[in-house]
Image: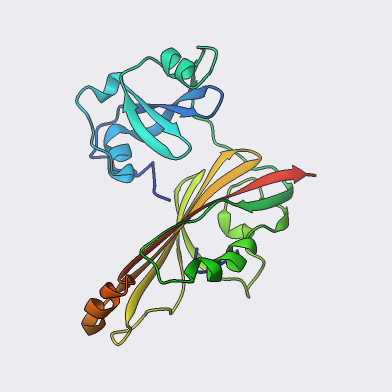
Length: 237
């Protein structure tokens, strides 16, 4: 990915945690797909930063475009709530394999808060560069690093959390060092949601440090946050 320095693990393995698996409903604009995930309740709560409610074993963890919440409703009622037909049979988790062929990246609207004036205009061409076509040969496994153009493209250190879910951190010297005015962190997520679609997020954080923090805070530049959704979809063979 040739954007600037460019989301969270649902499945963290730990044998010490309870082994009951989470019932997951992935919901969109028309209904849901329900499955028994690979994650325990403890693992999902830790990875997603959610409180694990009492009685979660009888609840459903709902995912609506990356927003997760626990629900006491039945799978059928949840499906109806998302304009489905009321059928959401429980599927066993099956590993997704991305399809080879032509893929195209698209970028959503960036959310920018407490950032320097003009940053959005600077980001636009960088983000637009992410919308590129790519001929993919996945090798029967999902690996977001394969979306890079080559050695000259920006390096992201990806960590596999699950076969269909990776987190990443950009490798950059920006803001590094004890004398730096700001700390810069750029984190990513990449989730294969179907054999022909990957959803991702970019989270850029710039924080003032040291003696310059107070002055930058007065200028509204002490705690800059940029969040950008993006995706890659198969468009042909």
